[in-house]
Length: 398
Image (cartoon, one colour):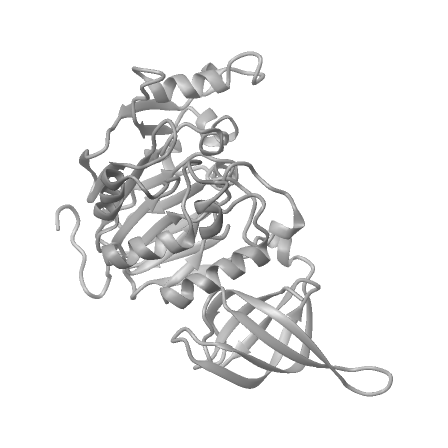
C-alpha cells in the first residue's frame, strides 16, 4: 500500500454518501419521499481524505449546502468530480453548487470527449447550461479554481492512494462507469447502462469484478426493459443481479430510480432483487455506506425535516421482521419518539436495513388499551443505549 500507513488498530475507512438517487428528472411527489427525489450525486471520502463526487445532479446542491463551513487557513481541500455523461439529470446541480462560488476552493472535473461536442466537451456543457437565456449568471461568477480533465474508457490513474478506472457503458450519446479502489474498499459506479451490447457488457463486468459496492442502474422493470423502454439506455434490478453474480461483487445497490417509481414500487423491486441476490439495497437519499471498519456497515439517516415532528412517548409493542442474517424474529419492546411518519424502536435483534417491520402497539384510550397495527420500513440501525440492543429508526408505510 502506497502513501500513509494503516494499521490493524486503525483500519482504513471509506465513506460513501448518497445525495441524489433519482433518474431523468427530480421528483417532489410525496409518494417518492422515502427514497428521495434528487437526481444523481454521490460523495466518496477515501481513507487518505481525498473527496470524490460522482455526478452533478440536483443532489449536488444539497451536498454543497453541507460543505460551506470555513476551514483552518481558509482553504478547502481539492475535490475530484467525475461526471458519467452529459444528460441533464447528471449535470443540472452545477449552477447551484455553492462551493464553486468560493475562491479558496479547487475542483478537478473528469469526463469524456463527446463526438458531438469535440474538445473540452465537459467545459462546453457547463458553460452552455449557464449561458443566456438559460441562467441569470454565467460561469465567470464561479470564483473557485476549476480544472477539466478528459478521460476515456480503459483509462486508469491514481489520485492520492486511490486507483480510478473508467469504462464505456451502453447509453445514448455515450457514458462512463467508474471504479474507485481505495484502501478501505472498492466502489463501482455504473449508472445509465443498458444490457445487450456484448462488448460493452464485457466492459461493465470487468468494471464490477470483485467490487465491495456495485452501484448499478435499475430504472426499469425487466418487463419495461424488454418492451416500451428498450433502447432508452437503462437497466433493471434483474440485470444488475446478473452482473453482480458474474463479477463477484459483494453488495449491489439499485440506483437511478425512475421518477414514476413510487416508494412502494421500489420496495417491491428491492424485495425481488433480494430473493435472487441477498446483499442488495436500494439507493436512498441520506444513505451512508462505511467500508473498511467492518464487512460494510449500512446506515440511512433521515433529514431533520423528516424527524422534527417526533414527540417523546413510550408504547409497549410487539415487533416482527427480518434480521441482517435473513432470519425471522419477533419480540416485545418499547416504541419511543413517535411521529406521524415513524418512530425509534429498541430491539435485541438487528433488523436488516430497508426491510419491513410489523409493529403492533398498545395505545391507551378511554375504554382501555387498544392494539394498533402498523407496517414500518427500517431506515436506520444504530447501537442502542442498552448493551446488546439496536436503536432502529422506522418509517411507517401504512
